[in-house]
Image (cartoon, rainbow, N blue to C red; front, side, top):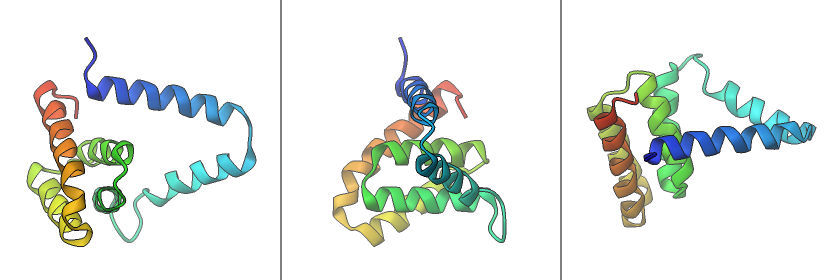
Length: 117
């Protein structure tokens, strides 16, 4: 049985391939811009992923939250660092962030239990 991580990752990869295969230049450019934004620069990649996580929680995008949790973990973010990011998102976004915070922690725990990142 696939877990949330596997389902999310496979669906994301499959759909990104389909979307990009259409050859729409605007969509391709946006995907490239998004990719470039998270590369190391004045800020390291882990910090950028934590920032993306905060923004995703505040904007209440569960797919984005899952993606940034994975990316932050792959860039060696600790549980404590993730929870500090969760705290910032809660302060900025208010109580409406709480349901998304619950799902983020559930997703994080699955990653940790299954050693995915």
